[in-house]
Image (tube, rainbow, N blue to C red; front, side, top):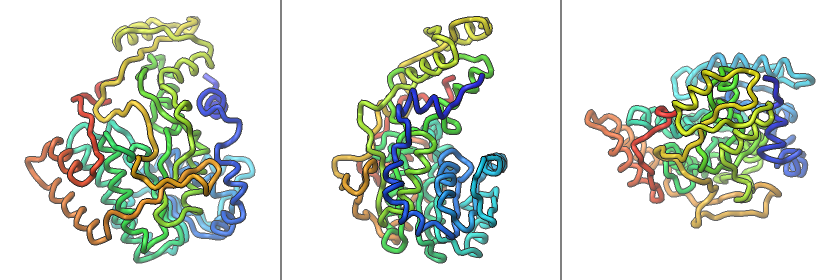
Length: 402
């Protein structure tokens, strides 16, 4: 199957011929160059879709040093191959990749032995499927909240000029634990924003990002397996390129405490099932609709390459924590629309100070040290510390679906 994914995204999903943020980058190119050229950059979680796109967005501004940390050794290998195989790609003379956990001791030693001007963190649990029980939730909160606070404390000892940590639209009126964990992370960032120059960004689904449902379509076709997706869940989408550019603009141009988001209109949201249909059309098929997963699997087993139809299973979502639509801000957020052409900015006052964040981390530690802990206890705790958390619990998770 040969398909230009970037072209497909542009024509069928974002429906934009150029990046949404192209004009904002052009208008601020002088400032971006002044803040990036010759500087030492650390990118954490840099082998993922957004992290690697951030790297590709800053390289045209000629940083002097680039260090990339990611838990995935294979991901770092592919990132390096991708960068060094790209035509006319600038890569700093000092380019180093480290395959380790940013919450560990080895990372701390590396961080404190260097002086980074720009620190951007993309390491995160980002899927709703990561909340099936209290074990999965503990790992997610440790990564999204506890490790972020460890990083912030390291930055207090060795201050960068710019610090960025990626958030999510799901932090606005969160209904899942992933969104709640990112809301806690945002609150921690704001608490440190008087000591460090900090910014973050909420944004839409990144089309065909690593591990996403759309990315899975490619694997399903390659393995001759049915396409499966919800038919009622609507999402905003940006391209991988746009995701990196949004984070770069937030990181470099944001004021301390800023939360950036893309200016997208409600009518631009799409269902996954409609994208699946467009994807099949692009590769020469039409959907062969199934009423159950089993029916779709049987059709896929009998499918042959000469068929004009491809088996799909579309369903109404019933997964815990699944929001039917997306939003970037709430009615109580202080939203600014005038600073950029295609970017909005939320500038809320901090809810906590650093000492109160430390107290929150101790409460989190005490919670997960309980031997009788259940998922409901974690939900109750999150309700007590996040006023607008309204968890959707159905008893079902994405591990139970195709």
